[in-house]
Length: 139
Image (tube, rainbow, N blue to C red):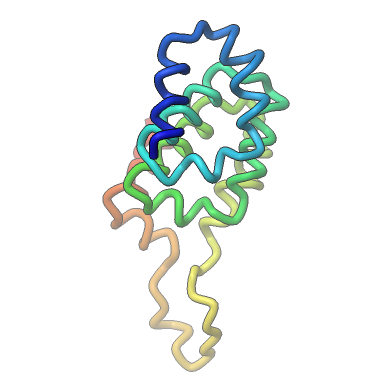
């Protein structure tokens, strides 16, 4: 809410150097908590854009395990897209973010219904926000 709006106001007037030096190191390990609002997501996107490689890796590790839910969230998907866009380490992005997209979100293991299970990738492609990741990767 309000704290996220204050952070966004600061990020919008701060120089890239200020974001890199002060804001990103302070927020990198808490980026998952900021993804609940549009303002917080925009702050995470700014931190990802201007942050150091080390801070981006910290942010990426925070998102581990939450990629699928973030991609389906009305705001949080923007941060996942930005992370995929600005990260130079494609192996790390593939391992930490994209690797978990192949896992079925349902924890129920039913061997009888194995062939009728919907594809976890298809589930994302058909969602309004998750499909944007695949459009970004295709461009």
